[in-house]
Length: 192
Image (cartoon, rainbow, N blue to C red; front, top):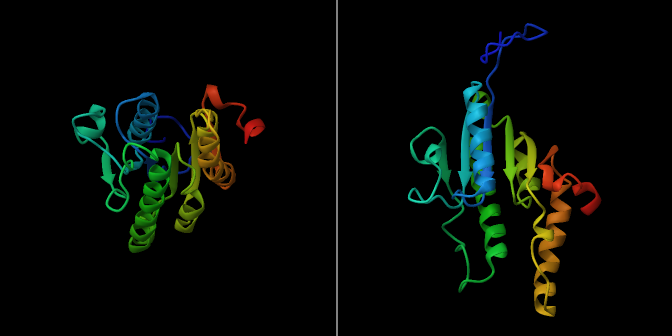
């Protein structure tokens, strides 16, 4: 039997995995609700789950991330601000995500073999995926909807600003072990 009470067809003993979720801003929203529910579900199955984020405000978050149901680690927020003068949000988010990934790589190297990450689920920003492959973990990218399709490019400057961001998203989305798609992004392979 597995920890969930189901009988395994191969009758192998259940081995809990160490699963890390990376989410850029663990506030209150639809994407956050989905990853929190997924993390709690995996934890309920007996896996060791930790949420890694660059921003977590205990006064503006889901209860499971505040009350200890889920372990939340905040990192990648000490060098790059969330925005620069209220602008450049995506650039700052990318840099914070890279910083967080580097922290996770260093943390993973210090752990013994049994405590290293088995799976890392990257949510929203794919830029850290190539770096996180150095952990040896399987990398899953959960794409709610490509950022490339969310923003308007109404001016030449905005188009220029988005050019490297869109390129990085396209390039790094393809480096994951698996892509997990929700209903809105089911055609991602046609888009990316």
